[in-house]
Image (cartoon, rainbow, N blue to C red):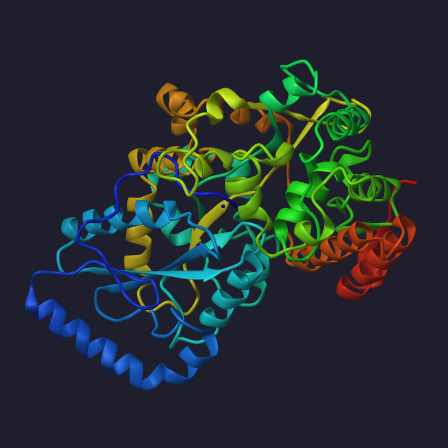
Length: 497
């Protein structure tokens, strides 16, 4: 989840394809009954193997042969490392079967890339560099689309979109996130967005004597509640805020930016779009970093060793929350797909146990609430062998019915307006209406290529205050230097003090 720092597993997803078989690398193959198709596929695969063995060695399992030829496409998506979440595989399997049935002679090869979020970005970039290894369709985090476009990895979709009537039903902010600022062209079709807020365990709150429903009005309220939980419930982690390098974009977005965009100068807290410059030296940045420092220095969060571990996202969703070991989690709308029947940790009691609250702004200013939105999209690599067939499959995935099914099983926010207003979708999960209502107060990450470098610098700053290796001032100063090195001093501006 999903750029967004996706965690967890499936919602009430359709059953997996009963005819599908998984090879050693985890690719889903749907066998065909027609021997002539099998023969052609074997020949194509054999030929590809002869020419791509070195590329496969570099890229790792599941990243060998390219998109195929004729009527074959290769579709790549992420399977999170050490996570039982197969919601996307369970959704795509039947979609492939339906598409192939409706388009005789076509073959869609699904290739899940098992990796952490940051490693997934690296692996698909390696794949897209060469025609020999480039897939025909790739699942892109909206945070990386601009950098991948700048690197020449993706092709614009405008010629396809002009004649696709359904494009008019997609929400404007979601479509804007697909555009590359330098040329104004669109490079992806979003299939979801998300919002973020505070999940809390009502039973633990009751044990600690904290009234529910709970809705903090300021950062001080959040920290005050966490301190009460720490005092009253030994052995329970009061508050999780993702931090550090290992959690990747989850640290930047669920953790830091949910704080930074809640400071008074929110609109120019990270990137000044009017000037086209990155903000450094701001009070808001230090205040957000100080919140992180407070959580970990006062032992209100997971231990630094656990917080900075590679599996922290899976642990939060499938262990700490359902086992009653975590009271408050600053996280995303997708969290229920950990707990629904087909998720990695089925937990029917979540609907009565877990409460939801919006994240307040620092001092309750403005609307009083803040959220961040990201999401994922389908993009066609610049070196795809069969872009037209890849586009046809994308259209099939993004029909109203299929979009509604995907957003329901993946517990994500719909980007098609006709799905987002559908009562059936809003009632599919108890949390859908709450998180959909946060969209008016949400922010999107800066849609410029350098964001990924700035995000890495944020993670580094967070980690240094989490471990206590640097003070807030020192970590903020290092961030400023890192950003200036990455983008150039002339592309930065002094923030509000």
